[in-house]
Image 1 (cartoon, helix red, strand yellow):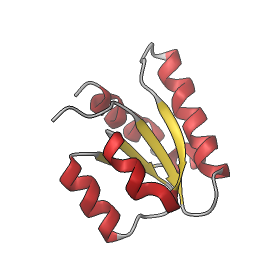
Image 2 (image 1 turned 45 degrees about the vertical axis):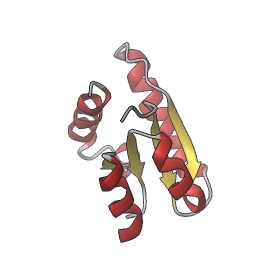
Image 3 (image 1 turned 135 degrees about the horizontal axis):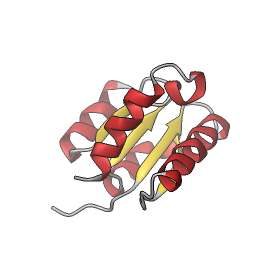
Image 4 (image 1 turned 60 degrees about the vertical axis):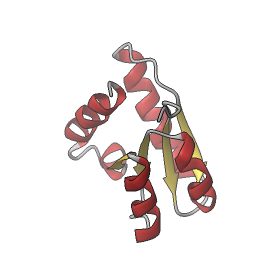
Length: 102
């Protein structure tokens, strides 16, 4: 099954945090020459967004239904908080980069 290659970032409340993290990932991708769409989405619409995504970066831990749906769809799920705190960001970013190559 082919799926749109797209990384989505969603936070539980609004879009400010997810937009910040999406921008940080976009900038890192650009710096590394990675051409991969990155979008901040509203968590309320996450279940509609997942089927057209390949990587999901969360800020608040998603609920189990969302994680189950991501797993069934074969979507890689990563924490976004390191992009805010700077702690462990390289590790998470490396894994995300691997996911973009699938």
